[in-house]
Length: 293
Image (cartoon, rainbow, N blue to C red; front, side, top):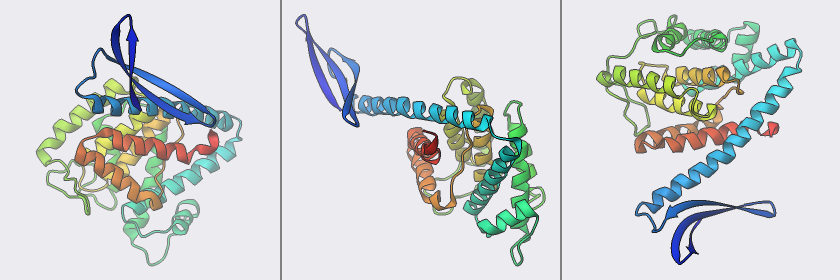
């Protein structure tokens, strides 16, 4: 990126010029700055790059949606059901494992698809995996508005058998996140933040690009950290609710990629810069569905 100066009828005008090489071609994008270089030029440069990335990313994401939908439409019903079952099992394994479940992938598959509970594993892990599977199917069928009560109900569905003392309840105590520099909001902040969050969602659900909406929903909700436990799991379910309602392919975070996930979240939370997590989310999403490009 460089600052470009143009002379027109004896007057000087400044532009930002960004060049990107794609194969053998070089594409140039310009942004008008004015008759003098702004004092916040570094911020303008950063925002300009973000705009260009968004433009390119969202073209790719929409192409993924189009090709995925085209392929999905012609699949036999039994194959669609099997694919959904496979995703549900994988998603349940990863989201539970990220939060400390002891069930491995094979044990999760046998439990959720064959009803075979693993021996010598905590009953809590077994029950929460089953509850997550059942709740995920419920979330995908849900077509009404996303509200605070809906999220509370989903949390209750997930934990009423294993942690009834916190299931469906907003926390009234301070919590911490092991290994993270980010400190979740205090109890008195939670209700106002949730009110603001759902107002923001209602306002932006039909304005923002669906992939940006899903990423920001994820970041904002997990940052509020409204529950004593299960914030990550509920957030990842809500993220897929947003993608599903917008008819985009679902999103899973592999357990093996958890460190980059944690790092992106923490950096966004500590610096209060949403773009960090948004960029991670979109890149991860595109990488997951690259075959559909």
